[in-house]
Each structure stands twice: as C-alpha cells, then as structure tokens.
Image (cartoon, rainbow, N blue to C red; front, side, top):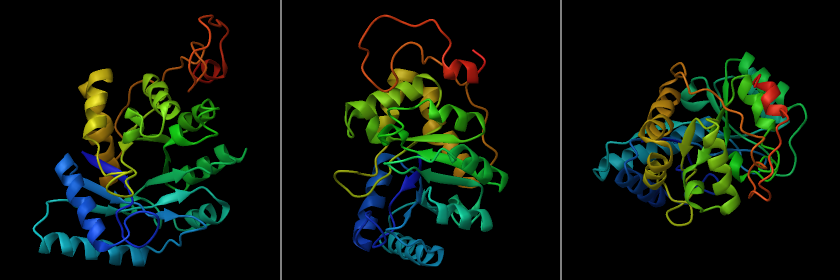
Length: 276
C-alpha cells in the first residue's frame, strides 16, 4: 500500500517529535504493509514550510533506516498545504515547491471555520498552473460534513479526494465514518491515507481500512484507492481512469443519520451538475 499523507518528518510540526519516533513510525508502517510514504509536514501559519529543511530531515530518516536494516521503504516529499492566500500566491509562482515529489499532485487542506466562496476559482487556478489538488480528509472538516455538495463542483473540474484510513472504522467519530461511506458510495474518493502523526492515537496503518474496503466495496476498490491511484501520485503519472461519479444526494441528508424514510424526487444540485 502507498501512503500519500503522513507526518513522518521529525521536529517540524505536530507529527513525529524525534528521529527515533520517525523510525518507529516507519517500522510500524512497514509491518502494516505500507511500501511507500509521502512525508507531508504542514504548510500553514503555525508551521513554517521549508523544502530544504524537509529534505535534510528525510535524508536523516533514510540513513537511519539503512543503518538499522529497516526496509525497503520508499520515502517521498510533499506537504499538507493549507489553502490560504499566502500559500496559494506562492504556489502559483512556484508550482512544484509544494507538490508531491515535485510532480503535479498537491494535498490541499481546508480551514475548519470558513471556506472562501472563491475556492472553486482558486482550485481552478492551481489546475491551470499544472497542479492537481487533492482535497484531504473532507469527512473530518466541520463545514464540508454539513455541505458536501460543495465538493461536486471541485470534482467536476479535476480535483481529487483523500479520506483518512482510520475514519473508516470510527477513529474520528460516527459522523466522519458516515461521511466516508457517503463519499465512497458515490465514487467521490480517490485515495485512502493514514494522515499519521504518532504511534498511538493516529498511527501509520492502512491494513484495517483496506480490509474494510474489500468487505464493503470490493477488492478492486481497495486496490485502486490504496495502491493504484496513490502510485500515480507518488510517481507523478497521469491519473488513471476512475468509476463514474454518482449523485445519490436525494436519498438521505449527506453525512447525517436518516431521519425520515420520505424521499424527494426533485433533482438536486448534484443531479443538475452531473446532468442526472
């Protein structure tokens, strides 16, 4: 399995604290069946983003893994790109500064308290500059869990979606778990990733999520979300063909328990967008 969202680099953000912790996280990931990790420290107002420092940290981890005989494990670099004005302006000037392995895919994290009405234009501008935005963990974003239909337009213009492995089995609560199913049922998910920060509360493990996907959605889906699609991102390849995006928004209130069996037959926003 290939993990494209992982806070493995030590002493940079709220992820691994020390080099030893990074090594332990890498070893845990390997034991779980993860073969590739993209190291994605935060790039936001709180944590300064420096590609040069990140490369130094990555080299230290790689050397320590070799010295301890741990591997093989392929490591790459990217970031958890916070969608804020300063980041966007810099990314438009330096399109490969924030992307995964200096290629074309960019992890994009949305604010928790407000999402700009200009977001569609911002994502489009990133696309025009050669970047493919990957929206991270929308099932955990308090705005998007209430308004998931906002993602429809972003998907239609080429954005992709990543959900968190442990959200699938309730680590972030029932609402996030329902959100994952809501997105998966519509083929709106392109990646499963750990978003690992430590060894305990947010560990670098995907195996349980992979098995859950196999049981509920089939092995092909599990392989596509955990291996095939992430490999394209890691290597900077054209994105593979995906199943058709579905609109089932009229069936239940998105991300929330069904309160009534009464269903509306009027075409909603998503139906109009996807011509359904």
